[in-house]
Length: 95
Image 1 (cartoon, rainbow, N blue to C red):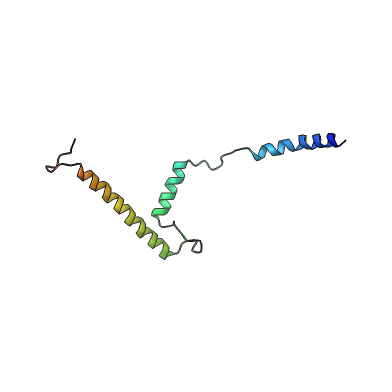
Image 2: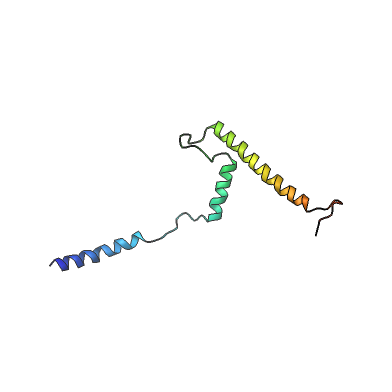
């Protein structure tokens, strides 16, 4: 009788266990979309935020915007410096 009860219990629990492993994507966002949103939030000064400063205060947002501008000014300066290094002294592009 115990064997019959165990088999019945296993048969009834099988459909419920299958739902636990179903992978459904409800967000519809791609990895690129999430990355773009994260970069936008960083440019707006919303991230990084401290755990005890959420939502970030106006002072934190201003500070984060300054840091973002400095970081991206340096990277833009590096890119323009490397592009100008490819030019020769007479202004033509080097091959």
